[in-house]
Image (cartoon, rainbow, N blue to C red; front, top):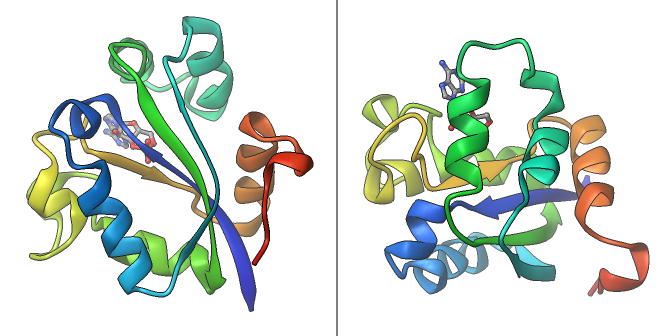
Length: 140
Ligand code: CMP
């Protein structure tokens, strides 16, 4: 099915100057960037975005890291965009990520893991609405 997913290029990958290399992987896989913004998340924004993880032991470190510098946030659109993006990203822990995936190539640790991607249609809808108004998304 034609889907949309929320993607975030995290502070570590923005600092490494690999936004373009990561966009190129999305495009080569047939995913289109239909919305994008760079943003330095406030603590409240990061906490709200990751609210489902609030009780997890890594929550504070996650919020700390996600507010440590600007992130690049985009909506990707394409056939099976959610699963396709997760394949491109590789496993959450870069040590377990398959060779050639974004996390294997650009990530340093489970916290500084280069990218985020929605994990299901329901979370994709919530995450996209968290950052973008419908008028800011350009379906094509
Ligand atoms: P992300 O896809 O952005 O969703 C939550 C993030 O928490 C995850 O990527 C990791 O960067 C971070 N994280 C840190 N420790 C863990 C862990 N043990 N399990 C899952 N995610 C973790």
